[in-house]
Image (cartoon, rainbow, N blue to C red; front, top):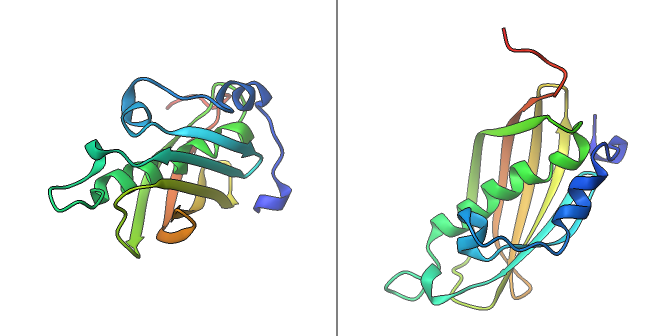
Length: 148
């Protein structure tokens, strides 16, 4: 299935996440906020804080990688039946420019999805300038499938 063919199977997930900001986990540490979420597309933003910076004043690449990994899985949940889950199998990040402050905005889009896997791309902008590109694959486990 390609992104234009995706349909929302879990609307409550979207309702729960839109505008949500967690106080725990990696999304809490980074201060991630979901600002857009629809079938096949997710937009997340956060303000770069001093806690995200290295001693030379740039954001640690691990923060951008964590952002991409988080978005990679999160974009899949609205298009999976409730009770299903997704886990990152692999992903890569191309760091294009340093980030030292301001707002980061990640746009994740599902490029392809089957019953067993999905490929997602993520673009990260920092104050409107492209800072990183990522692509990854997730394993998908649908709710009705049994282990074994």
